Image (cartoon, rainbow, N blue to C red; front, side, top):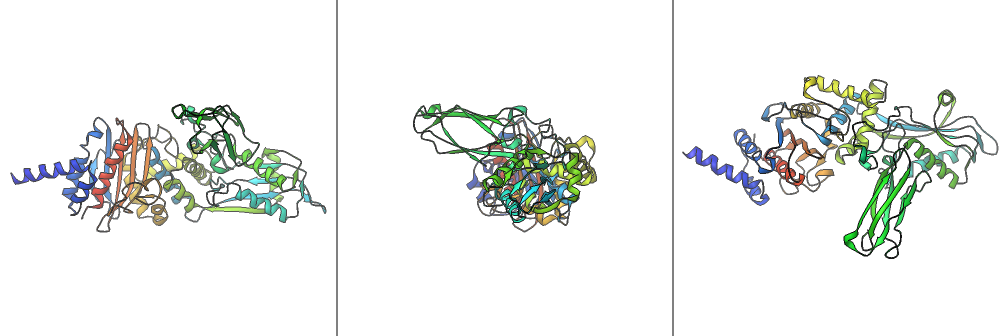
Length: 496
């Protein structure tokens, strides 16, 4: 009788705790055993927010790989951005922690006594996603400006030839065929290219016009003739009519801005993808040179077979280098799809000598097999999780997390994840003590699928790996996040 009363009492408290942070905090003041943990997790999974949803949850100790809780861990479900855990792990395992991206600028031909380069400038890409302002105080053109410094230092005052973009480290299939066709202008669908620039997007800031009826103003960064904006968006004094759209016409760099923009609104910054980022970078670099009065007679173009021959005898003027660790941190902490896809093709190009989506995916499939899982347990289509065709099990994910915890790259991998209450996509979640900083994980969301997988550091200092996959839920993802956070709290409070 006492046992039944105790279990009923605990269930009521746990059920209420899913919706009351204050009550949960009070409950968590005393930690509990493995049996209590299992009971609590089962109770949380009975949340009405999960009614009729497909749910999988697995919890494993990171060091000893002891399974503490298992709920349908063998069922493949959509993973959304949790796919990035596999991509970044594969990058560390197969590329190595010392791997670096090197984007180099070469000159061919000769430089005359008057400073004319009778030849071409070749920018040779390595698949680096970091050529942007992200690592340079938000100065988008910082890297090509440094390249221009090197050209000036070489004594070049004019270029008779072309600016050649060498993107051949990857193939030229820029878009994964499983991505949503109606969203290819959005920043999270940026093209994948062996020579990339500014996340392969252009930044557009929109400001209201001088008065109602006037066209809105736009500020484009980087300033370039590579894109064209057709602006029919007008300023309105009616806040209720504030609605605008920004999209790029397929296979072009013509961007349309339509709708109405409220004159009381603050400026809005948008990011629109560009077509063929290699030419985007080459064009911006040419424009930078010309602003410095270094005339370029030729055109901006993609590399050809003759360039591949001439580069063997070319002079290297400068290189831009970026590490694998900072690349993986941005991928996971900020959940950058573009970075994940660049990593995927980099893996393929390095391991299988083919910079394609499929080549990279084949490496990841090999990793899953190495973890002991069969082909029937998963389906993968891209490296970021944007594709709805990705399917993984929580068994695969937690086995991967345990593997990385015991890998030589553990520190890089763990430090790349979002941190509860502090960093990345978990910055605004689990901010209260003792949960702040104790969850390092990867979030994920696409329509109908919400995920959270990573590590929980208990109040006793032990690391647990966990994976929560929820599909086909009704209502807001905000409610699913509350359930996920309740699970994380239970793990932190575990006393085992």
